[in-house]
Length: 364
Image (cartoon, rainbow, N blue to C red; front, side, top):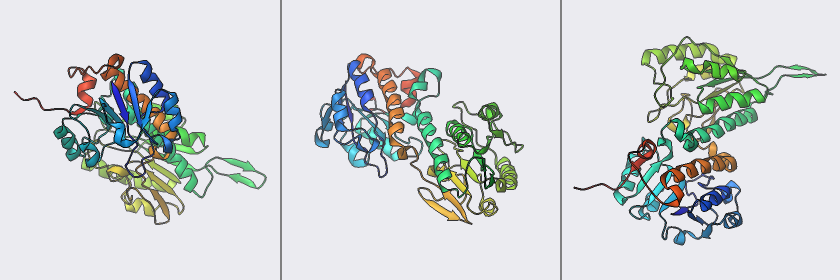
């Protein structure tokens, strides 16, 4: 099976779908690899490293020749999709819940498309869970960004000039990104609180040394491990309770997402107005509208003296390790789809069927 790795073209995307170590692993399993020249450059992986691992490094015009599969990070543009031959396997973040036109375009080309965000959250698919691996990076980066922008120190310091109180950090949402944010803020010495509507995660929050912020609101958990969307009444009660507590914190990291839906608004403008000047909000839900009412997706803004970071590419801002982790997810999926380097798609299999978002239409 020949696998092609293109250089990402989406603005700001610095990750690469396969790193040299993964190329070597796939080569040993019977795959052949073609990597576009410069594909790993922005992530810190040189063409020479790919060649040493056994890949062919080629220019874009030669990349797709004979390719059975194309693996990438972001979804292909319309022009890139038009270059895919019928029957080609495509792997990447394809946004099937929000980009129906893009998925339909791939189906129309006869492409067999597997969306990394659609990998079932089951035990035997954990090694393929790219949402978790990239959320880990994003949760870490969110706290690093906040610490850089906060005009206060994170840790408690006792000096000859006096004692400096630690920063107070609140993390809303205790999924993978939230737990990583909690752990990172704790390592930096902050006093950390975490909140999630799922009561089951309270123990996880406290195991990291953080305090669970009890707002008196609990919700259910979906089959995929996400928090179920709250009712309008529950959201109103949650916002009211949060607004009372928000002025206590110097940094707030929000991570609450509902797949395929706009992000729930957890921090109204009135709550931002009550925060201390110099405080920071990092909104990891910015791509779907943001958890903060004043978030500007893709931008960093200041409102009421509060810095609100709404970057939508946090994992791509740490491309080396983000690529390394994503690459391992991709390898695990390829080994599942093509044991010993030979494509063998079994759509009765839960992983294969669950992750596939487009395939050639069968006619009677």
